[in-house]
Image 1 (cartoon, rainbow, N blue to C red):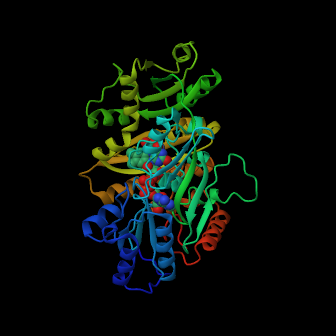
Image 2 (cartoon, rainbow, N blue to C red):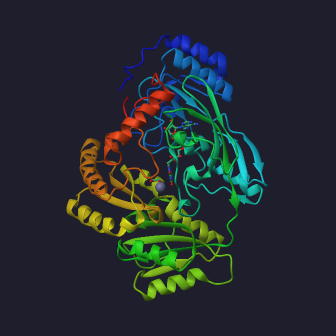
Length: 475
Ligand code: FAD
Ligand code: MLT
Ligand code: ZN
């Protein structure tokens, strides 16, 4: 892969000299082992081959770096915590990686307006902790929170496990500061909850995967701390009962803060790879649902709901966490699926979504499709934020299997899943993004007209195409 539309006007040696003069010698990495680590993300599919890694400490430095790269036709890959799952932060063709890790200051927590202002390199967990310190809550939550950065969350419009209640990243962002490809600083970092003065440009940058600008700061919404969270894991014998359980929980008026599911095979793999993991169940069931609710009153809403679900044959077993240790253990069984799968085998990931009211019919059609495929040396591992209509399908084969053969077989099934999904008007990416891995599949979700307008938007903000070239679509 190369960026033919760009012919650099400077030698790598001169570029490195310039970068060092801006961010300091120790903040420009060129050692091959560093390039390997910092030039990639979680996917590890494409070989990283960046020119260098540059770590600025301020918006001004980001601006100077981008202005230089733009005038010298150098491709740039913005990079955060490198936990991305679609190779968005992968630099595989000599790009200059601009990594935001040093821009990690929390600038303000406003307990009146309920906002937090932070530099883009602050981790999601650090934001959560800053909110907690003020008895508030930052609602974006995902298993990668210890490493992923708010800039990366914004660039991917990350979803996570609390979207059902609080919305995704887009809903938390009140304002952002962005550096455009030519170095211009676009300050949209205002903490207004209501602002109908013309186009709200920040939304173009949210979910743009580093192709329109580098996010350097953000103001994010905080909310009051949820009170008395309860968590249950339920077992059910049929995938199609899961949307029905969701409907029943919503109609019962329980205050759902998370509604996740995973299959028996996902559960088994976590129990095998997560040290100390225990299942709360005696008997194995094909599907499990994790339900978290806020139960501020005295009424035992979750118990009442589970009893009714049991009576009506929607669940076969259930366990409610009895204390904070078990609460964490239950979450651990869900949140450690990704890491356990990675330890278990080679994985191809799908991150699909569809309208909740179509879930039931889609799930039936998907079950039939996957059963008809019946791959011999592959587990189909399903889990995800099913309460948001977001289903993660992971194709998993032993590490010992020939990887080319695995990719081909998984791809063939994936393509059929996408064809089915497009009939239901679903999306091939609910929350992970397109990056490099899903670029070929964008047409399943977006019309040619939509992609054409995306390209025009890209050309407007980044006419030379220096920012994350090759990601989402080719220009
Ligand atoms: P990176 O991987 O570094 O980059 C991601 C993209 O953003 C790239 O295109 C990059 O170029 C761009 N980028 C990064 N920083 C900036 C910036 N400052 N300005 C402009 N562009 C930038 N995702 C979910 O949505 N929900 C989940 O529940 C979830 N769970 C996960 C669990 C695990 C164990 C792992 C490994 C990943 C998970 N992810 C999940 C995926 C990932 O954590 C998110 O996509 C996250 O938002 C990426 O943030 P990052 O800082 O690691 O970004
Ligand atoms: C999750 O929901 O755990 C994440 O999106 C990660 C994944 O899909 O593996
Ligand atoms: Zn997810």
